[in-house]
Image 1 (tube, protein in one colour):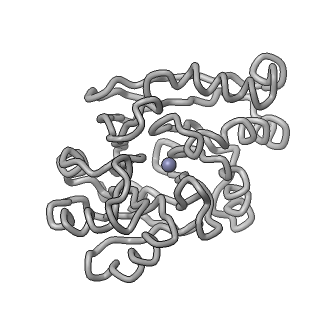
Image 2: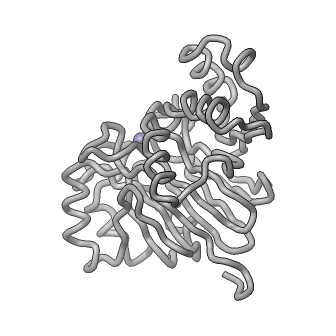
Length: 259
Ligand SMILES: [Zn+2]
């Protein structure tokens, strides 16, 4: 971070896996940097979790500029329709909202909105949605931040990506949902924070990461701060027990960092 810039504020909105284990909210982070405010993913429980952060005065919903989606599974996109309606009816939003994600983001998100609230995009919203779909392995400027994405190892039907978002202050890396693969090491190198999924304690499922894999590769990861998220009950308990030994932080709903 340059000395004259304010630090980037990273707030955990939801830190659970797809199934809200531990009573936590689905995958979502709120980030405030010099350029504005954005969400990383928007799981089904996002609006409820955001309202808790509004109550604790950690976020203001009308400041949201853009949502970056890592992939198109329900536990990462399912909260969008209700959030859009909240912005429209309660906040009175008029300015456009940017929705950025991998290939097929526009078609999938429009279908999600249409099936949730028929005609909401045409007849209910008083603000414009601007869709941006990123190319893999290419730098793309989105809302003045440089976004880079690489393919994630996850269900191909969800167009899974890991993303890196660079602002003048900070570079943030987010694995999205993925199995372990060595490209994550280079991708996250020298970032200010690497948010890494940790669905399981052991490597049980090819499209997700087990804590034992993170332990095996911890010495290679060269991000300034490693933050684990997307927890099941077992992986969270194991992560809490090993956080000092392995030098990472455990995300929890409402927990925040200044980067
Ligand atoms: Zn997920």
